[in-house]
Structures are given as structure tokens and as C-alpha cells.
Length: 141
Image (cartoon, rainbow, N blue to C red):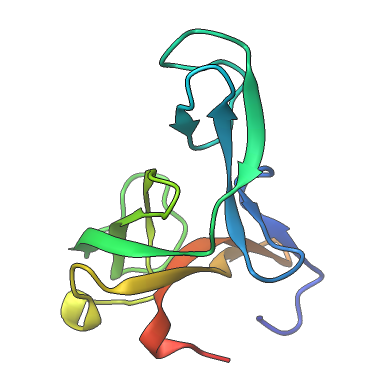
């Protein structure tokens, strides 16, 4: 955590659990057809019903693919370079997210990663946090 800042706030409420460990992404699961959706929502995109229930995913998953980003997209307030990857969770859903690694050198398809909460950017004495994927063999306890 960064020092000398008034408060830590999520970049968007309802994306992840972060008040206690293990951290997890908040999804919706349709009680009619079983469809999993991230971020959570009220309607099922598969069967068009309003039977979505909120769940928290497992904190660990498998990195399926990844890439490095060296130029910030418009509106991005974080630092570059950074990496993003698609992670498949045991529940069966795949979710794109930022990793904790600055380059792809230490990333390998099929490696286990876990959801951690890390700084996205700092603005107006606030540290905005988001979920990131961290390789489990590189824990930063």
C-alpha cells in the first residue's frame, strides 16, 4: 500500500471483494441456465431472465494467454508498461485482467495465478485499487 494517502478506494464498486483475503472477483450466475457473467449484472445474457445470483469466484485460476502493453490506451491512468491476461477459473469462466508483471518475461501459459488487490493509480490523495493477477510462484507477502 502506498503511504501518505487519505484513503484506498476501488476503481469501481462491485468488481471484487477486497476487505478480507482471499480476494475474489464478483460474478453473477444464472439460476435458470447456469451462465456465469463478469462483471455482475441483473439479466442473463444467455437465457434473458432476471434470475442472476451474486457469487465470488475462487481466488486462483490458470493463465490461458497474455500480452504486454507498452503504450497507454486513451484515459488509462496507470503506469506502462504492463501486462494483461485471460484467466480461467475453476468455475469455468474466463476473465481478462491486468497482471502484476511489467513484462511478459515471467509469464507462461498454463501457470497458476491468484487474484490480488493492487494500486491502479493515485489521484487527489486517493489510492485507487483494482484486482490484478499475480503468479502464485511470485507471492509478495
